[in-house]
Length: 148
Image (tube, rainbow, N blue to C red; front, side):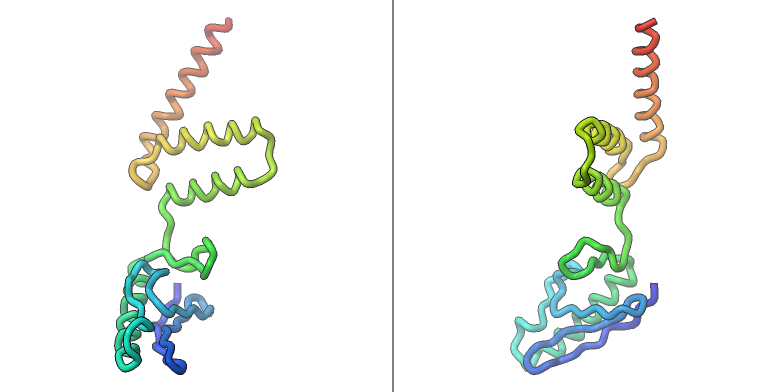
């Protein structure tokens, strides 16, 4: 990711910061999208530029440390990383929103629940997931053997 330090701009009475990520410009007039309470435009006009510089520093630190920035009014990631759980949830919800049969959606929900049991916090624990899959495999084998 290529990012330069944000510049502070003052247009009439409004202050915002502007920065580029991968040759695309982003503008922030407050810190909501980066998880900050900084809002330069809520201060008296004489202090807005100073607070705008604080916002620029906070935004830069947030992005350098790998914070997740999404596009304005969208869930599309611009910068940062999602946890395994967030990626799985997005994929699951996307598939559920598509036009599929009830059986497919039921199977999808079952697989989703198995994957969630393999999570440790927000990230997949491979040993835990393998144990979950092995336990299902054993149950399936026992079910098949009972039928013989």
